[in-house]
Length: 345
Image (tube, rainbow, N blue to C red; front, side):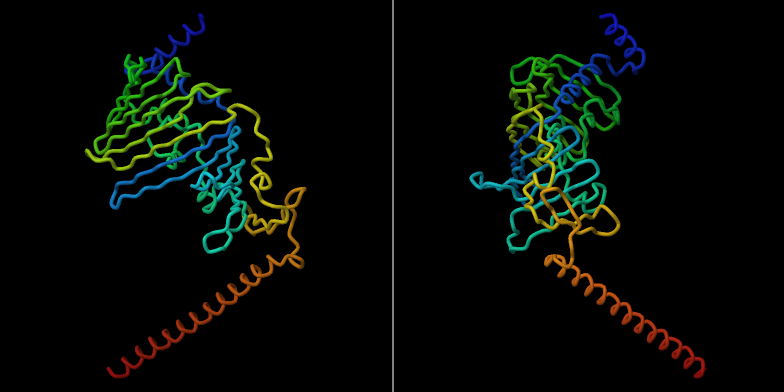
């Protein structure tokens, strides 16, 4: 008990007068609660409406596996009776692995590839950590730009934080009040529900963002959002709106490590895999024991690609030669005209 008292005194002395120790403790309780969510599987359905310009409706479904920093996201068919995934992406350590089991509408098939997570292609396959749901006032896809403490607990642009008593939909809450350089923010917290956030409102000079959450009790963890409704206003008009539904499964239970492998993602034995993590592309073959170098002499899929690269290189060489000749002719013409002009004068 005396340790808690001492910490409270230290916090009071260390923080500016306009950031209350009670607010800091509540922020820590919210973030530490989410940090206890170590592993799990969630299915997510998004209904997104974008009202800027021509109104657009987008519906998406995903299944996300997470275990510590390991993430896997399967894009699911919109038809819930259809099985399998459209595309599966995993992010393990510094690698992004991509497998697309279903053909494209043109009957073409994207390659199965491994990329560095910081490469240009690797960044095209972001995986959102579902543990961020209900902590930010942005749409699900935009959560890729945020962290657990990217808003609650952040001091960027914050000039003051305090806690007041309040209520949300008739239930008593603690309300975090943020004074910021360019506006204000309020966070409604149900402390008896794992310090669950049930609403956030951010008011800025040019826009207003709102989040409303419905919480469900999930075995193995506690209270987690089942619905997250986000709206952004520009003036008095809704700019974007998303209704996110979350079905949670098996929180804080062990996830088989094979889930994050290409085989676990559904790639069949014999699949050609292109490894782009090094300067030169490695063409690999997926076997029961893992990835092995492909043998070009026995790999029919490799030869067209190899030939295509050779043709491409040949075409590039001819293009450079032609460009060089054209440049030389223009240079000669320029010199000739200069000399002719000098002779005339």
